[in-house]
Image (cartoon, rainbow, N blue to C red; front, side, top):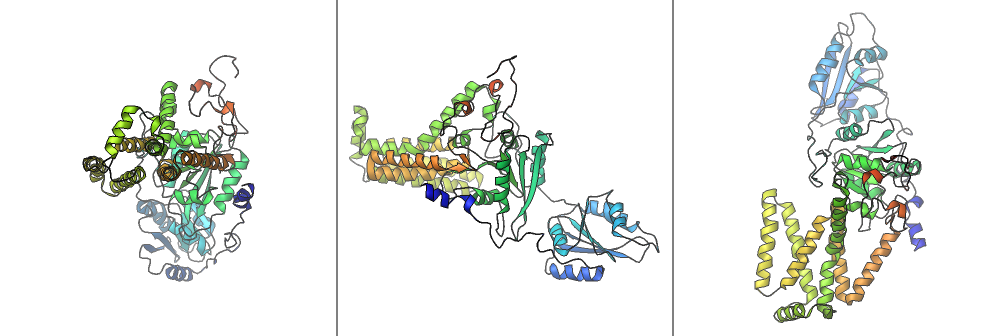
Length: 519
């Protein structure tokens, strides 16, 4: 086991040889001739009808300039008033012009960046910036005029809460980072940008609190992100699969969330977050298994309610994954554990059923999955009708036709409700697959199979790590001091320390409300 872990460890993976550093092979330098620059860019963006070229005359001089931009990705009003009007009044007849003059004149009205080659200029154009080229200057100017349609900040769909903020991430990276920055007004909040994808060049932001997060963790996340070498990153899940330790595991090792307040809460515990342009989900790392069953409401409600809610969620985890298998054990292998009246009822119904208990469970579970997928793919009003009415009609028809046991319908319904209670969608999806594995093992070997498969699952969980941290921590290894916000949550006034595994340098969260009271 140790040898396999060492072989598949990410620390032993070499950096891809085909990854080229942008500083090793610089791009083609710009010409001082405006005509040559124009022809090169025209050829570069051949058959790109959304790339616009606009020639303008600078002041009363004979000099000309070109502005290149993507239609629909720049603010036309800002480009016209802050750039073109300034250029047309910048130089008088007979006056020389230089890069310094252009930069000094424009920097007061719009953000500006100096570039020296076509590659940087083209990348800026495709990122939504306007590219200014002037006759006689072998340098270009990227102008901050980005503007495009984006979704407004609304309540997250998958993580709705009763109390707390109603804000959720959008698909625009800058809006998402601003939602975090607005909640943490501290210069220790660091935001590092990457461009991932040889073709897509997707903007990715890494966030952490420098005064809390362990440097080893931050460096490890940076290293893994920097090693990504793919054509395109279209969603945060691409990054998630490429940097986690065990991609083939059913259990996610990175937490995804739509809520800025949840990201801030984890950042304050010394964790690292990743935001991806084009995705409304943030990735949080490292994470342990119990944290997939936490919600922001746990910290906005009083702690007795949090204790009850978390207990129900952990119970739902077991019900969603194991209740159909326990039904199978009781009916097929260990019916003597049931009360006599229930045994008589089951025996009476099973005399007319054509399928074995295992086939019954599999048929019902597959039917539920079909209904679930159908409700997701159809339009929202029709999807809800198919999910509810379809389940009622099919269940009632199956019982009436003596195909399915009525007790099994109740068991499957409870298992489905338990899956819905799990607050994290990725974990809930993993439980759907895990349920079939447990059912098949139980159907093949009975109660022994049920116990053995759970022993294998627990052994697997003990062997998983999330960025160097044990997946079951602080349960295994057991740490009493870290159980104050695990299955239960003690009152916030007593949560004075951050998790020591992530906030190694700054564990103290608060001094406490009580005077001169130490833990």
